[in-house]
Image 1 (cartoon, rainbow, N blue to C red):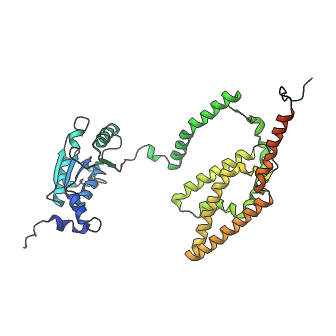
Image 2: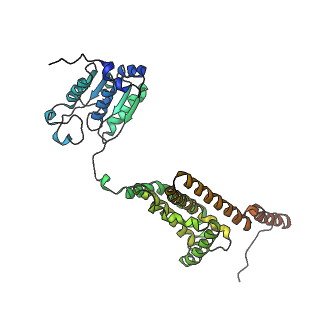
Image 3: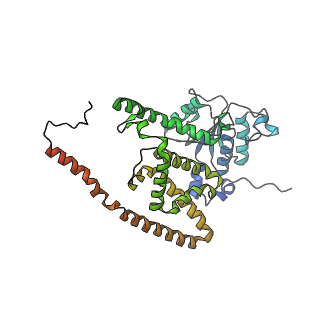
Length: 363
């Protein structure tokens, strides 16, 4: 039986060249990485870095391997049950690189030994449990004080929170984030106008009414069709063309569109098309969703054909938008609005200094 050739660092890690240069490989060889926690995250990180050629490690974990670790922890095997994780992972690294220098901490990490743990290290890898917030804070602050990077890829075991659908968690997070601003607005309304549901335009129940919904829906729908063409309504089909993992975002955008529309459909009716500006937040989102539908549909024609088709559609919509704005005097809007300023100047110049406007007197 032939004996194995002597182990060589250069030969063992030669296949890394190309990912790193020869000089960078030598820098890895002389670098020290501290890894706190050797379970599902820290264990695989340690082995990966050892195969990358890191020459020095400081590792810490006070636990032993158990059967329940088998599904996710690199060092958990039948033969390692009951053995300290630090000892097992040290042996695995030395089996990869017998020249590796390894310092071990078998006691729990904390404020008392964090400084010694990070001594001489270039990088800290966070592999500790997700709920160890205080320990993570201690290690990260110490790493920052030393000017070294702290890297993490937080693993988390399933818990009650993770069983809540992501859409509900997102909606709840959004609600929590919005709530302080909503309370500030209500407080300002009360301070400025005498009531939380009052505004500078008057009482909310005087400005909004369900009776306005049908007439405003017809007005805004007609104006939207006239200014944006029927193409804009393709946005409502976006959920049919995007991948399943992105449909949640589409449904959120559609919900925002419909919410904005519902608010202003109930608002005081106006006859001028320019009040379509109330729906600008919804229109912007609808244009984005329409673009998604057009791009997904055109992509079936091939790259060049889809580019040509989308360019023609964009140009056609652009010309239509300019023509629609011109016909509705949108480019003269500044001059039209000037009449309000002119009226104010006339009132200012012609009324006596002590005059005050008043409504009709009641008898």
